[in-house]
Structure formats: structure tokens, C-alpha cells
Length: 139
Image 1: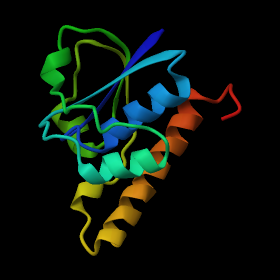
Image 2: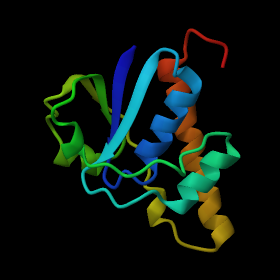
Image 3: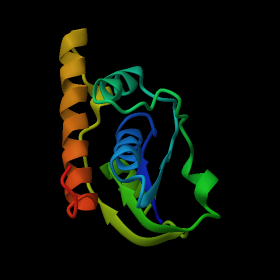
């Protein structure tokens, strides 16, 4: 199985969502991991909208990229611009690429507005994971 590491700043939302979707959709082909440059814990809104999508990430924990420095990956993907700038080289990675998604933790407004923003980011991440990793399936 190929190993993929998703990196964002806090490992609280975007990288966790990407890991969750890849595990759920293609866990038969990929071993997915996520980490952050400044881990802060799983965002409860991220866990909630992922549960709505049928993917549980509430039991995950935020991890630092430092935990993976002695690991090797087939692919390392930064999912936010800040992580790409902070982490320009990851020595445990094979190929390296970047796909930026907006940071939903910056959203303000009513709870429903925040949830709508998290759902939008979740859906964009799912669509990207399907396009990039599930092209040969009928998901």
C-alpha cells in the first residue's frame, strides 16, 4: 500500500479531513496520515461535518510533523499555504505536492454559518480526494 501524509498548520481540520476521506474511500490502496506544523487538537466543527459525511475523525489526535521525520511516505501533500511555506522540505517524503484549501477555523458568524463553511471545505476536500485518488473507481 502507498503511504500518504497530509500536512496543514494545526492538523485540526483540513489535513484531518483529507486523511479521513482517503482512509474511508481508498483504505484498500492507501495508508493515510496527517500532521501539522503547529498541532492544536481536532476542531469540533470538523469532526461534526465529517460525521455528517459518514467519516469519523473525532477519535483522531493532532500530530506534529516532527512525529513523522523518521518515516517514509510515497507522497507528502500540503493542504494549506502556511504549511507549504513552513515545511518546504520533508525528508520522509517521496513525491511532494500542494493543494490549498481555505482555513475553516477562521470562519466567523452564527453556528449555522460556520457549519456551512466547514461543509463547503469538507466537500471540496472530498471532491479533490476522489479526483486524485479514486479516478479508477466508481465513487
